[in-house]
Structure formats: C-alpha cells, structure tokens
Amino acid sequence: MTIKYHDFNWLAKSGKKKREAPFSLRLTFEERAKLEEAANGVPLGAYIKAVLFDGDLSKVRRRNTNPVADHAALGRVLAALGGSRLSNNLNQLARAVNTGTLPVYPETEAELRNACTDIAAMRAELLRALGSDGGP
Image 1 (tube, helix red, strand yellow):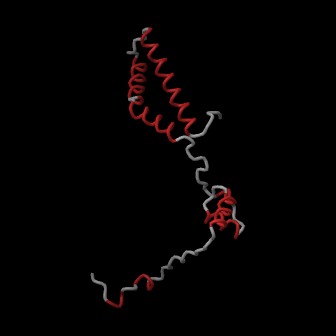
Image 2: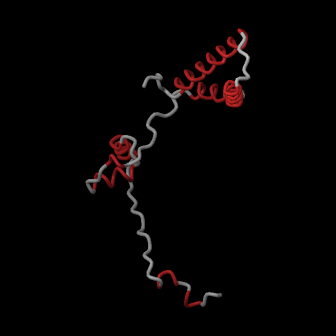
Image 3: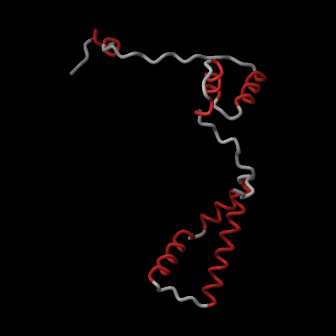
C-alpha cells in the first residue's frame, strides 16, 4: 500500500497525542554545581521536578554516589579472577563432594585452604577498590 501525498500526516489524523517538547534551562557552571550539590546524587531533572511540584524524592532512583575508590586495585582483582578458573574449579569440587568421589588427603586439604585464602584476599582487595571496609 502506498501513502498518498495528502496522507503523510496520518499520525496526527489518528488522534494520537504527540509527546510534549522538553524544557531547556541554561545555568552557569556555579549554578549547576550548586544544584548538583543540592540534588545529592539524584538526577537533576528528577530533583528539579520534585522541588517545583512538591514531589517525593524517596521514589527517585539514585545514581551510585560511591564511585570506585581505587581503579588499580579493581583492575588487579578482575585480572586475577579472569586468569583463574575459579568458578569452574569450585563447581568441580562441589560435584566431587556431592558424589562422594573427593579423596581428602592432607595435600588436598592444604590446597583447599590455600584456595580459600586466595579468595579471601581477592574479596578484601575488591572491597578496598570499591571503598568499602567489608562490614555489614
């Protein structure tokens, strides 16, 4: 079916409402900085609407206000996780334990303890990179 030249505006004829045009507001750098500080991590548009129309900011999804504290530490953790076959190895160990086929010798126990120590070190490094102390 071809659209005739006089039917090009069929959307307007169909009765569907167009979306309202966005409102633009120009601010100085200082004004914007002050506004962002007052918004405290809430997206600026949501904050402005909430202030103007007495909205509830508790319903607004906030951005992450705690960025990565140490990118180098985070890179080390991700490299260690990427270089290991940790998830595959843990899955194989769990399967062996569940089937009763894991012989537990002193060497095996020592290797498992070393693996747990390595995982704890990666966890601590990850928490340090994310700026957390690891507490609840």
